Image 1 (cartoon, rainbow, N blue to C red):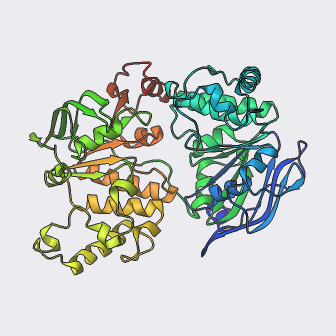
Image 2 (tube, rainbow, N blue to C red):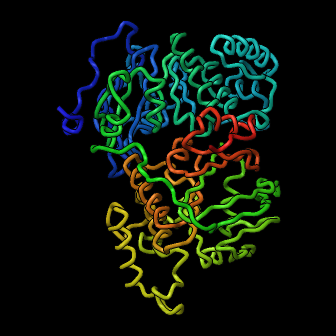
Image 3 (tube, rainbow, N blue to C red):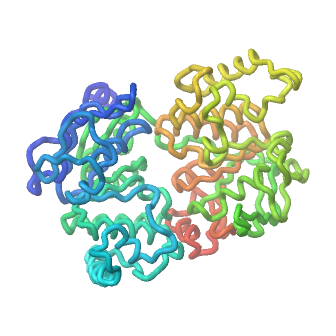
Length: 530
């Protein structure tokens, strides 16, 4: 039987016989509704004690809701939770912690100007006297650090340590509070490859010491590398639980989406032409006046994709905003087709669009859409003054709606309702609305930030194919992504940014993840393109 035929049936879950270590967590017939949305539908999940258990699924599949119920953020409408075999009534996170369940959130919950030690103790003080609590915590922290390979300076200030170190602090906080089961939500989203490897070593140590880890991630490569078992959710239901050693990324993707998904980007070799975008000695500051882009120069040619890799927060956002006229540069030049662009001022983005630069921003909801507007209104956002939509004084609403309907057909936007508020579309379909609007203008230069952030696997495949089509049509594409796999798959050249500087250039066909990771961490200053 083919994998596709297997997926058409309801896959069997792992055998329900009690494992040697017993079940750490058992969820039975969990249901949760938010108004008309049935987020969790009769969910059954068993997590073996002393294992790393992955949970995967598309956006909206219900996995975060399920874990929020386990951690006490939400209360299930019906169903049973058992912790170590005993029925548990978890209505808030303090009860979850009391039962030995801890959670490390995707966005860390730390006080930046407190020390590591103070953050660990915060909310778990022994008494009104802080010093005895800190002294006890220092001793316990020393034990935990050595036992679980979680070394971090207890006196370091949070804002002065790396993101990877901050994540360790979050894990230490949970362990300090007695966590035996640890939930991690998308833990590698802000880590360099080396930091991710370090995290995996920590998780393996936790498993060896008898702890249980539940890992929510959309990165199937990580699931295959670190988990013992993996559960797949689709549209609020649990469709499969399998041993990781008995599955593959392709099969998991198929279970998640309900159809075959191509996980690799298929493209021909680039055939670059003339330079369409040139950035010369660009210097850009953030909203606080701190210089985030430091004398950056590069070019992008017709028919090529130049990817900028780096850990989030190293100046990539400010660079994209300056190139597209959304942020003033302090100095430097941006040239399109050899003509210098004067992008300073409130209408910089409009001038960039007029010059042939289209922009898919990193944050679609904050900068790419007005989510209270309908789909058809967002389909012309930024281009409503175009002659095809009227004479400038009056908007041709019928023409705008026809264009929106065309976008929906071409980009397979679902649901196919141009009058629906954009806030009611999934993340992947919101991204398609932005991409359709920007690509439809036939720009010379397409600037794309985080093209598939928070996007379903099926939509990722579609978006990647559209970007390749633009390249093959002779457009110059500047791509920024924190997903190194995405950069390596799509880009024809890779530039690595660290602390506001381009620290090296690499050929994606020859550069290893380790080499790129060193540059992303600012350790190595160049990988020679071959």
